[in-house]
Image: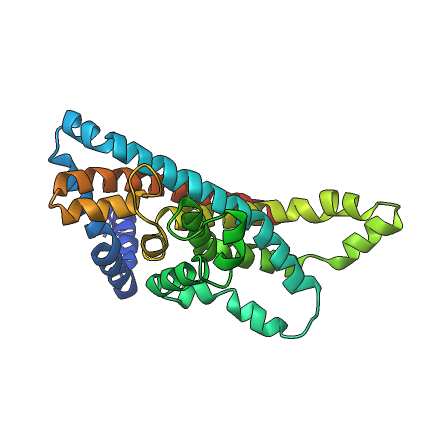
Length: 281
């Protein structure tokens, strides 16, 4: 075998080595679970003409659901950005009774079925509920309003911020803060200039994940909201309503819009994680 033949054979051998059994299992699994459903939705949307797709995706009720969905999800993500960061700080820096229990409860929205969460929230925040009965005399209604949608989104997305910030806080060297204090920095200056900069990538990553999770929520919102168009109807529930009405084209168009926005959010999360890794490096 000549030298040129040997050189041309090695890349082929290296390429064939890449097609190992674990690689094939991974690609097959991802194709069945993720790629095929996404491709089916895109191909179904491709059967619509551009004018028809635009008409269905930009119908007045659809635009209203987009505004309610993303506006409420943004509000929930902002609340979790602050409250989740504060919760992570307390769990890492303070010792108190039942700390382990509270730390475990943070992951409850991950394990709790969303329908159960919706029933629980609707009961607690109803006018006869534990919290709703206290807010009702003040003229504040939560269940079956847009405020209830926000409460549900906050509930199901809070773990993302806490679990993103908590490990960074645990790795943060406390002696750096002590050094800042010894140099005359106040607690506010130490927090703003020493503690916060390393936390910003983790906070942004967790907030973006919380926002993406809130945008796609269905099970808890459908039970705590009245689901009235132009009031508290969100886009995922509108997709389900379109399917109930046998409006496959309308559900496909709205679902494709949500898919594209979810892909953009996923790209943002990956960019933020890459920024976090480069910052840590």
